[in-house]
Length: 611
Image (cartoon, rainbow, N blue to C red; front, side, top):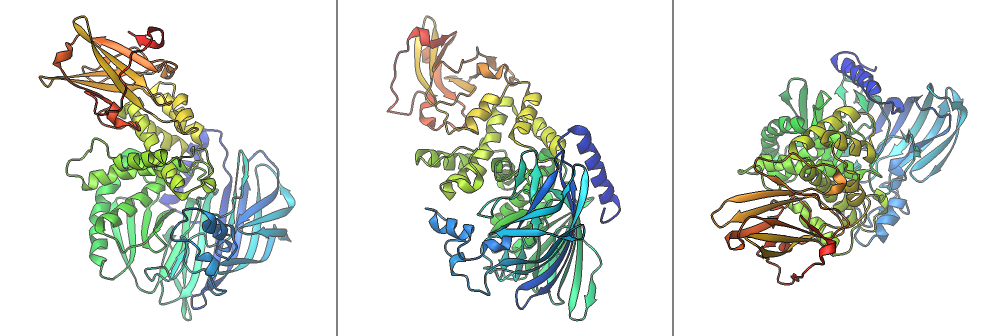
């Protein structure tokens, strides 16, 4: 370990528990880096020593590095993609194309060796391919030593200098970074727009910069030393998969103790919005225990909220975020980025393929936390109503693409935003609806505790949900994740049937779901029914007085049941009155029907579930 003490012991215990829980191997890295920053020229030189542990059963004959700063050059893949999308990110647009020589970003590799022997490499945009002199055998280590020179680009996307709020240096994706190798091979993705995937490890980083700069960084600050007109700032970060830092002469630095073993560090400019940053502290202290109760304990001793970047972006133990916001906006972006500490920084899914397991899960808990913080009538019946509205809009516009689409390959930014954030978040809301809240909550904690620091995929998540619920749920993942089929259920008729009433339902959309149905009598009494689907081979725990109906087989578009209630005594019948289910047409979910276009029609008996 780089440093000793309680945190180091904690990491060792986590690693031992991880190996005991699953045989999924993980590659590991140890970075030791020192850079000398010429702040006036926006350039720096660096030395990197990297110990790479091949814990795989494979023999490696090559490795790949990400050179993220190379994206900020005219003609790069990020530039071309932004200029050819129908709805480019407004923060990028054509700005890269117009960068001048002293505004572009770059990494120039001056030397690279493997265990002391010089290596041959080739650079293609943001990816460097390195042919090894000696293969790295399974369960062995190689040491790479590199010298490099870099230029910090004008801030455009996430990283860079002189952002819109005047922050001098927002240093994300700032160093040559080894790509991830896992059970499916190398993941040397070009830096086009989206997300990241890297091996966990330890970072020991020294930043030499002019003495008038205040530095904020991932990890734990060590003793700083002065060298003439510069100060050496050293940080160590253990069991993380990235390292971010920022620097500005005008930063104010405050430390907020949230609980024993966890301090929040806030870095912001003392401008006219300082009072909102002060108020933010109260919301942080209220939000953290709420989040930890639902998501698991935050495993690091610090978290840093750093003004910088171009919006809000998550990194290990830190976020870069713009600070000129309303109080609620400031709280919202802080909560959102902090929750990434679970669903990306600790679980570490491959964000190029499983973005919905990060951004989506984050959105679910983000929306819930904001409801808790700002809603006087918490909890809301449906705290994700805005996510539903965006989902419905994209569906109606014909822009939806399945969640199996690579993050960089969506045809529109709108489709990606909906899929990753909203539909991903609605995935959890639907699982809560299907499984019941208690079992869902238990499953999410079980998922975190089993798969932290192990890069889970969608199947790993599905297995946990099934084990905790006791239900088969592959049908849900097949429909919601792999297709764009939609949910649309309707109450088509309520007819007199002897002394009772026959309720007739239709599945209009192609995606099946279990149904919660509430019947309200004229006297105010409510009767609750749960209709499971056969594919689940089970159902959620029923609430008091709720009646379990015969399962609805998915091949049958029709379903009906008879109840011992006079039709004239019925005031209202509604499918899913809480609107947790993303039914694309709520108007046909109730009786009396509010949709004038709904056709009331009889159904052939042989096609109907008559029970």
